[in-house]
Length: 363
Ligand SMILES: *Cc1c(COP(=O)(O)O)cnc(C)c1O
Image 1 (cartoon, protein in one colour):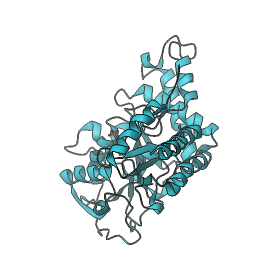
Image 2: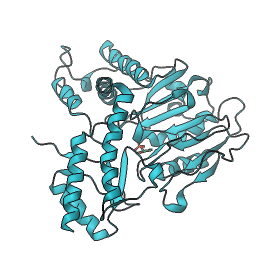
Image 3: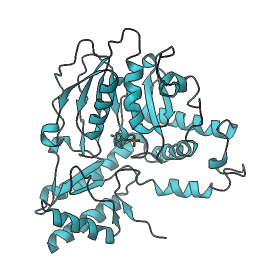
Image 4: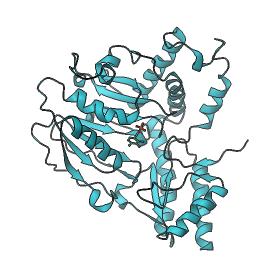
């Protein structure tokens, strides 16, 4: 067996130790004689798995009791609709929300909200292909906005909010899909934090939404499908219907793995060290350059180019042959992108940089 270094943006690399453990338990989960894939979600065994996963996640992120943790399906994309449908159904809501558009995922969320409510883009970095984070220190947040929305780490463009915007007292909603559990977080600064887990946490098909309790509408929302109302899953322990049992189980293992890495501050240190290796090389390279404004660089997704499309294509081809997979950039940016999530070992980044050095010398 030989494993490659997988730089995919998502679904993405998972910790090898977690995969081995899951493999060991595949036929017989802890003496129960069946796989987690075969268990009833109503069984005591599975209840323990989901309860432990939630407790461990709360511990890692320091989630206060005033926040609910929901394990949902439909991906981050479904939350693009769930966010306005729920937050604009709260008592006194004006059905207006303000969006900061810093990339394609933020734009999709903004457009989806626009189908349902009065959504405004109050800041954007579209003018420079989303290569920076706009100044959010004094935003024109509307007085009656129900919330302010950001996509905190922009998976495709490789930017991150190093400082949260001043929302002028409005609840902040953040899509953290591609930076979930990559660094310590102060949950109390947010109304809603959510992310698809397939970028930095676990297998595809699960989105975790962490929602301040008072932002979950207490009553049925007329005209909104049951499954899109947060209340439905909040009242039913995320098991109104059959959840993604497998993904919850594997995420639980990743939470334990993160505890072993020193929690979020431990993994953050590693992530900083890994990203520095790649960014330092990009800054000194005569062939490659990063595409993002330096102060807005993401620790997770690192896009870079040579400036020559043919050379970029050759790089992707040759890196693949060298066991470095999925380095092709998103079609909207071109060039290359290395996603160096929590589970990417430092050796993978070192191998990439050493390949880049060699490629540079040859070209
Ligand atoms: C991938 C991604 C999404 C979309 O996730 P799905 O689970 O496929 O809907 C949304 N937001 C961000 C930041 C992403 O990286």
